View 1 (cartoon, rainbow, N blue to C red):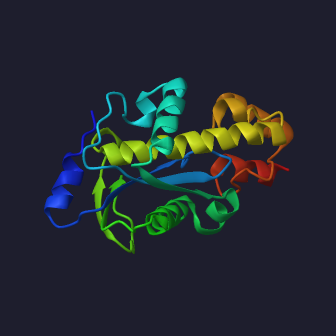
View 2: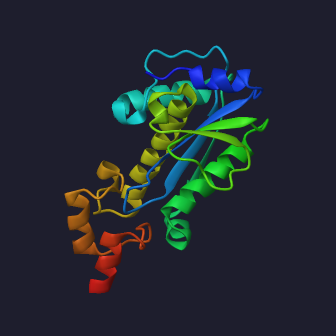
Length: 204
């Protein structure tokens, strides 16, 4: 289960304000990548907050509402569009979102905990944690906010672009999604730099 152990280590090292950063949606064939940054109070505890991949959709929504309405918690989220992903690639797009989120927080954090590997040219002191959403409450909170915001957007995109099933698979490359892609061709929200979509465009 996550804890505030890594946040406490950073505070003890002279970084009083710590943000956790995570993303959702690096792997889908369509839609944006979603990034969130979260600053939790020093005494934060939560019996159910964990890596978003280990929780049900209903639990995601419940915890999201708790986090985003708690006046003690500061957070910011960014969506990096499919168009920008195609222009600079998914890794760079994710890093752009992480930088934007960190710098948008007010007051600005002194250091950040990032899920995964270090982010190049990051403007603040960073600690990268592999599987950080299972280790840090701040990162786990960011993972929930990023995922719920993206999932809700993909449900709306399912209404805008019917037939692809975005509201069900959220743009991930499921067999049903790839069948719809072959039948309908890409829509404006598909990532044209991703293999299955690029191949489809070659065949059109």
